[in-house]
Amino acid sequence: MSTRLTRGLLSFLLLVASLLLALFAGEGVLWWLGYPRVAPVRAAHPPQFAETREHIEFRYHFATNSAGLRYREIPLEKPSHHRRVLVLGDSYTEGFGVDVPDRFTNRLEREFRRMAQEISFINGGLTGTNPTYYARLLKYVGLGYEPDGVLVCVFANDVGNAREEPAGESIDPPAPSRSGLKGLASHWWPRIYTVLGTLKAGREYQRRSRTSDFVELVSDRARRQGIAEARIEAWVESLPQHVVDAINDGRFGTGVLTYGLVYPEFYVDSLDLDNPRSEVKWKNMVGSLDAIVSMTEREGIELAVVYLPVHFQYDPATHRADNLAVRTGTTVRSHWLTGRSEVEARLGRWAAGHDIPFLSLTEAFRSVISPERKLDYELDGHWTPAGHEVAAGAIARWLRGGGVFTFIPAASEPDAE
Image (tube, rainbow, N blue to C red; front, side):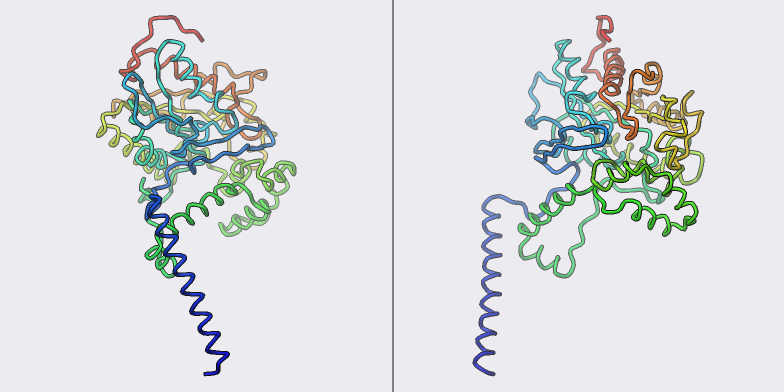
């Protein structure tokens, strides 16, 4: 072996030894600082995350506490004189599109404080999720706050967002795959591996809503589903260019435009439950709700359920041909504007079977909707501050009526709304 080759090999081995030494030293420092070998289960948003979110219809500040909730920082241990209600739900509960003070949970806190009752309505909303994730958040985050009550807010699309597979979905996330180099790294340097994984997850969360070419992405998905090219072309023609540009810039969600092509019956499945697919989804959603019941019963926590309607159930304007969802192909049925949807009826029967207080907000929204009072954003569909005000008023009246949570007695004063 030549001298040059020998020196090169020695340099390489020295470099490898130095790298390994640095890795083991870094692992030791993280151990000394108390970093865990395995990352805790991700059941909420990234902790201590903050950003200003720009949207074509609104602008608001988003920030999380150390538990990953869009809620102020409070100690896990509950003061003896205080009551806590953990509110579980999706983006409508989280308050997508509005600042924190405008959310119905914050309005509820102010209302009960006005009545000299210190009740924290801890916001556990998670955008883009369903009751499987509500149960997961309760198990891994919510119970740590020692709640006296849990309020599950089931939104109208929760059935549509449930899994279609008959086996359902476990509330426990799947174990991460750690084979090959990942397995080697997680075995020898578990804390470094965990820290890097957490940083990677944070970056992915930040760019979750961005796409370089929304139209091409959804068109390819439709082709894989076997959707005819003529239908894809018609969908492309229906797209408002300024909304497509906003999606590509991360200033609008993809769901409103995507459903019309790849899942036009999304809200039919969610509200009418009139086909085998929606039946499977319903059963899977109920399975997650049953898991929440089991956890609250085991911990001695009181439970109540609220149904949050979609705008197709209370706003006639959303049924017009120029509505963004309708224009791009989403199926909307006129009977949703009257009476009770099948999902509400079943949810009410499920709650009654478990002796759980249940409230539907559909009629509360129908009773106040008008062209002058916009309860939801015209394009996006999420509640405006006015929509959150309606929800807070109806829930407050229900809670003050008694019989929902025993720690909130019936109020003797007249309704202030």
